[in-house]
Amino acid sequence: MRRYVLGLNMRIGCAAYSYRKYLTEKSMTLEDFIRIGWELGLDGVELTEYYFPSLEDTYIYKLKKLLLSYGLDISAVAVGNRFTVPDSSLRKKEIERVKRWVNIALKIGAPCVRVFAGRVPKGHTEEDAFQWTIDALKECVEYASKSGIVIALENHGGITSTADQVLKIINAVSSEWFGINLDLGNYRQNTYEDIRKTAPYAVHVHAKFLQVGPKGNDEILDYNKIIEILNDVGYKGYLSIEYEGKEDPKTAVPRAVKFLKTLIKGS
Image (cartoon, rainbow, N blue to C red; front, side, top):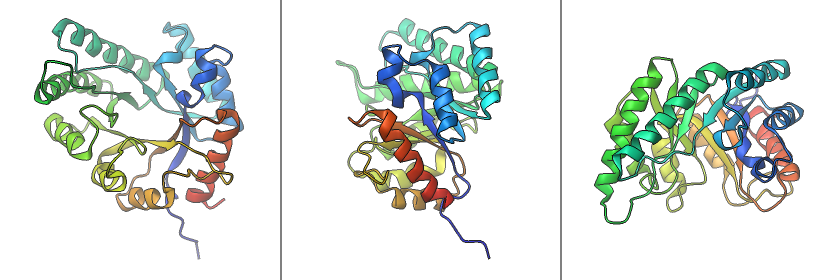
């Protein structure tokens, strides 16, 4: 009889952002990060906009081939945009930025693009920010849908600080090509309640690790409870580790990977 393991169908990945210290100072390349993903026994990796030294096709295809050689998926590409910009011309540039990354996602083989909304700018209302974001997302989603790419909005502070705010946007955009990049550490007040509310809309999950314990568990977030919630809604996608602790990621991330493997794969 097969032993039941929570989250058995989920996959484990890691966001390049976890190694931002090294990627920013350029002592590590995205190629190095992909190799590390293979060494850690990950199922896939998430590549973040900030660390691409080039957006030329030759470089994108080089990374795609490297992923193939290591047998790794690319679970998502992540963009650091902001839609809550009052100036419509600047907002248009942010929309075009996301569209450009939809094209890159298609070329490199990523099924979704992670995006942000933003904060309410001074002198404007939350409703202004919501409407700008909703209009921008509708345009991006329509564009992405033509390439079979999903736009994944992250709960990332500002007008996505709570589940109710996120659900307001989800309901307004209302598209099968739009979902949530559920960041498990970004709901600061009603963490587990808000995760539960928005988990049904998750197409990609940031498995936030803030303080990795000796056994690899996060000492702030209860992953046993989180995996139960995700399992309850039938989530079968990626848990992309996003490490934000003070310890060196080269020592902390491997423990987090091992912990998640034990938790969801039973090994």
